[in-house]
Length: 343
Image (cartoon, rainbow, N blue to C red; front, side, top):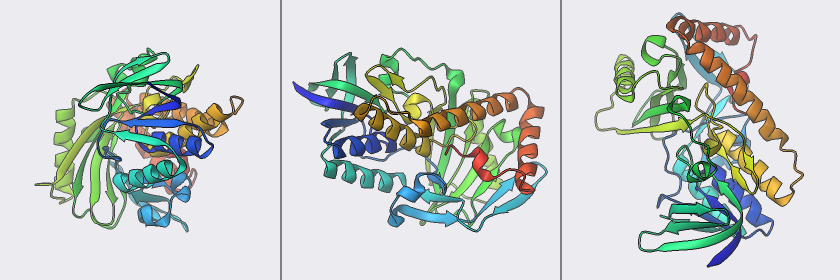
């Protein structure tokens, strides 16, 4: 049985970032990823320019946008900036890059490994042929919404604290990045068009269980039909998004990203919170006195987004009025787009 300083469960941006930072400092790290292919996830791939995109190599940035189109029931306008507001990345390309970096620093990665059991000092996992056992001093859960580490910690997430994201990957979505708010179709959520280099992510997000997924998909299909975006034969994806944040440090166990419930309840954006929480966890393992100021800022923004989302979800009227009011503030530059970012 092999012993590691840190075992990380999950090979998304959070787990890989944590692995790279720890191994760079000489920490013995094992990362277990359930999928055989790093980077697979339902994700529109939008990253705010003020967030982690500045830390990525230019080759990973698919497209950048100096404007954002905002549509509500009564408004349709653009927010413009001198610098890019948001860029898009391909999750597989991002994952591959980060995995290479972690391995280069000395981390050990095992893909196609499914965690079976977690004990206070060891993890049992299967590689499809046999069950293996490893010991750890520190355990990091970076394994997404259905986190095994989160369940080991006794943090069961009620259905009402799961958002849902649906998307199609289509050949062409137009040149603009679009945010559309329609309470009739998407309740207190929204739909989007996020263009990449060779395709576009078109989808929707709902921050609660106020609508069954089948109805949400029908509404998305209706909206896309109105946009004259064809989805026949296109790849369709759906996934739950954990927004039930209850902390990130639990003794020698830690949670990052969606496993911690850090995705924005308002927008569903989770890449930057995963990245920031991974940096906080790695820094804390290396230095237990680390203050994690950036993560505390993310957690505070998460609470604000959660409050706004809950208020909007109380009724159809509030789901209609809140986007209209927020859009007006954006339109007349009384607030900046960063108010809605998890950065």
